Amino acid sequence: MPKKKYYVISESKLHEEVKNKLFTTYKPIELPVVQDLTPEWHGKKIPLAMWQEILAFMKHSYDVLKSETMCFLYYDEKQKQPWSFWVPPQITSGMTVKSDPEHINFQAQRAQYPDIMFGTVHHHCSTSAFQSGTDEADETNREGFHFTIGNLNKPDIDIHFRWCLDNQCHELDDLSVAIDGAESPFKDDVELTADMHELEVEYMNEQYAIIPDLKQYEFTGYMDNVSKATIPAYKTYKSKRPYQDYWSDWGDMQVKKTTEEPILDNADVADEILFNLKLDFDAEELITDYYRQFESKDSSKLIMDLASGKTEDQEYARVIHAMLSNSIFLATTEGSYFYKLFSEQLDTCKKTGYRVTENDILQEMENLSVHDYRETL
Image 1 (spheres, rainbow, N blue to C red):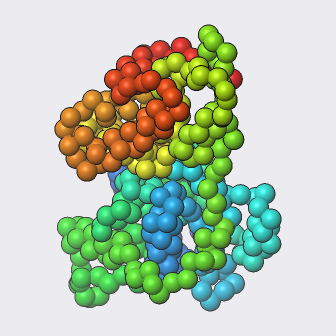
Image 2: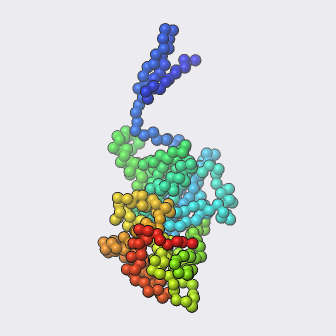
Image 3: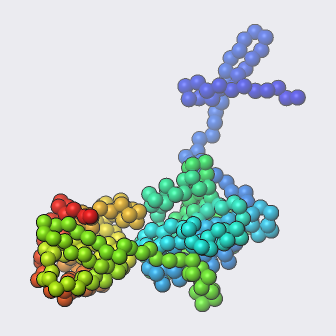
């Protein structure tokens, strides 16, 4: 039986105990130093055909809903092909999506999949792929491979890949760690240098980012499990004068019919426009694009806050005012479309009898961005 070795750490250095009849001493051990310790996957990889079907669903759901969707990944060691994925019943709203365990079909569908859930895939619509604060909170305690798909409005999509284990998330650049089927530009017998390996990873990752022909897939079953979030039937404001109820349906504002003259002031009308723009998926995407193009210094945090639902009304008012006051932005296609969305909201208010101008609303947005002086019931 080999003799046991004993080690001790002193002053952050590892030492091996050396013991004989006369004395005991400790020999320093030279350890290899590496920048990062990354986990290694020894199981089978996700088949390329399955990955392409997932990408196809992400693209199709974005095109139809302009809102996030997701799927769960499962691994069953007993199966020859252990990987499977499930598009669970889910509720989506802009750049947030949650599974819907209360859905009537949730439990029955879940029973059809393996016990071990080992990852997720979701998309960030037309924004870049990144791990948002909400993603990190959801995934840290959920072991497995997690993928975020971004830039679904462009030919070249963006993919962010991380592997969460033991309450830690490891960001990985090489998608071939988890996905099979991409071809290397080099022959198998070629010994790769560090530069060649970097080129190989880039080349193979590009293959994983190709959206397949959507016509070859049937999405009906998947899309039946996706529903958009609903909002309360009305929103009520308290002002200094008697209040009036407003009914909203995802950006279409209709005033309750009364025989009285409308009583909301400019501040309340501005607040209603802000509320409806917050619920408009296109407006959310345009705000994200504006952050990226015109507020790049703070864009990462601003986009993450927007994606995770942490953006306050003051910030919405500030960025809406900035977008409508930026002549360079308004000259772009995105700026023209945002102005159209805003104008539609303003026109709806005018049709109800309110004497309000664009400058009135801009002034109220500027006021709100400094201080929220309205009290919402």
